[in-house]
Image (cartoon, rainbow, N blue to C red; front, side, top):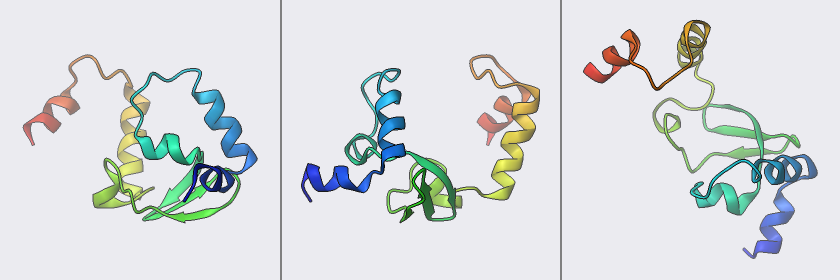
Length: 102
């Protein structure tokens, strides 16, 4: 597939968000994200939906997704619980120590 064909996959909302985000990111993104120029809105299991409403099967399955899928309710609940307490990741917390022990 050519770059021109790949660019046509990304709708106008995806392209706008992708291009804006490039102003804030340092190099080093996974190349598939840069190549596709897609902006995703949500995911469930192995399915993703972009901001233009297109549906995709996630064959990439990055960190955390490979084992539990997108939007897993227990994972989302754990994140929400921690985010309600503290979101800074640089300092030691009880939860981080417990995670490291595992």
